[in-house]
Length: 289
Image (tube, rainbow, N blue to C red; front, side, top):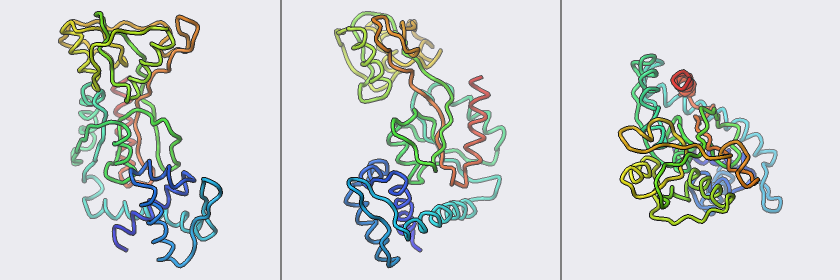
């Protein structure tokens, strides 16, 4: 079976898990037409219909259910084979994806603890935004993520473990140096401002919490960002101030304030490297207290 065939089965599992070709395509960063074509190729190769439409959703046929059950084991065996080829039980590579706030905050201490446990494991780190990291995870390009909790329901093959919540905090100055509204933390800040009836004078919009802190440090304005801890103020003349109601469900106007963003670990429970993900989780929880 070629690698492309294995990926087709992997993507078939995602279609069945989500019940939607369009949602599976979105999570896998593929077009719906590409997913549909892959499903047709699988059906032709196996000689049986695998999916049936019900309105806008799809479900597995009897043959599809058998493939789903066997396919999960197949993907686990395939990951195990790849791990065996790449190295022995105590060696190999852990491919870690992380958001920048973790990379510039608590991640170095977590990796120090992890390396002390697993000296033979090589670690590669890719920084990015949660959506692109999640796509890389489900396509087996990454093994574990430190990221924000995705806004959609996670399939059963994906494990989530929360590490902490980042409530909103105000970095003091005057005009608003806004945190990017296309990001989860920026959307939380925007909802908070609207709930409080605040229409800020905006100076700029940045997609990095630390970049916002640097601009505030230069007197360019105030920032409304997730409170990622002491790293915000390190080497900078800024102060983080808690907001009334931010993260606790009660705003100053009586409107519900946005929830704190949730930071944690994501990994595939079918991966041969799941044991390293669980070890990384244990190290992170020890470091964060």
